[in-house]
Image (cartoon, rainbow, N blue to C red):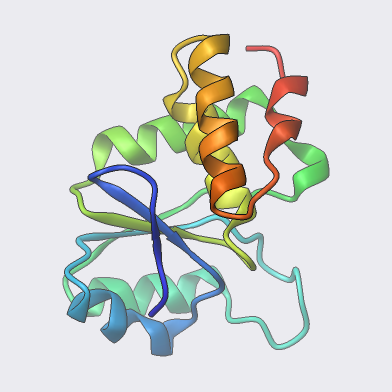
Length: 137
């Protein structure tokens, strides 16, 4: 399982299915946050199958689906709740990791200056989350 650590408590990864859950356990994660909407791609596992696999292995699970064109303050609030209410370490995933990075940054940023630092951090990891500037909170 390839992950990128965003802070001491949260990492992101690309797409994960039920078969990826044992790797999350082996890596020491306590929580999986799924940011992919069901039906995004053909043959993509549904959230409930990943949740079943996660809970079967003793992990916490949250589904905070985001289709990028629908980003709203509700998504940010749901991600904040997922980060605040689940045990760390946690891994958030989407197809590539970009949406998970974006949601994490928006949930964590305390002000515009903080958000700019997180956008720069993301760029250092090869992710362009500059769209975060467009959402006013």
